[in-house]
Image: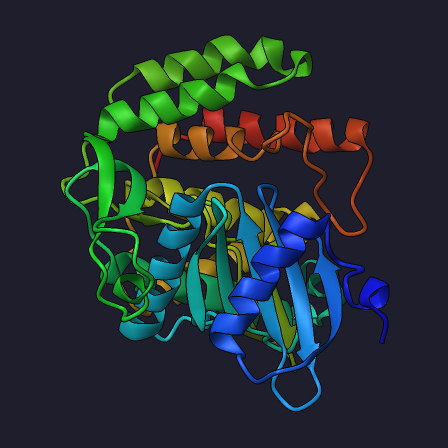
Length: 339
């Protein structure tokens, strides 16, 4: 295979050099035969690298080494503390100011594409698994305040790969203040089609919000679109960048929205919601989900990191249908009284 064919997933010599450094650390005797780019993650480059005589790996490169190091530490800790299926890091580090992370390639079909093709019982099983996974994470990762999760310590690789790296919250705030700030930030990013809901959202966020004495891990992008499935079962949950610590009600509300409502018509959503909650309650009592929790969570799913309206369903609907979906979901969240 020519160098051009081998490097078809690259974006220039600098990125190729970082990939080479990463592979030298985790597959020093391997001979790469192909590099395949993956569209996964807005802030990083992800590639599958295959070898003649070794298992394939996924290489992630990011211009924010601290975020890569935190993701590596979190993946390692999840693997050590829970049974949530995640790819455990083979190595992580920094090369030329770029962070890199290498994990094994987990086989399975992209659940974003496969979810609607599963039979109803399998979809309920997936929803139940997501609920159980989230409760397991909540039980395993507890914090003293809300905010961005980061890893303490220096920059050496070994300190983040043992499963016991100290994960902490940068600039922690109390739960009520964090929910308001989180909700207001995403309310400000809503497009003009939501102007008539903005005032009501502000009122909900300004009202009383019950404090959460022990915030838990809030995996920011915890959804079927970041998971793999085989034989109807989830084989891996992927993409753990930008983790947060937050009240359990916020992460329950967002995951429930993305699992139970995102892909299926309203007629099926309730059965998926019950399955998700059953899965959560198989591990821990379901937390109180306040109106502010749900409204902030739903608002956070309306636009992506680039400010573009996100497209639910699969195949994804067009922008007008997406706006209608998000408006209906936000209205429901604003009308709720909490549970």
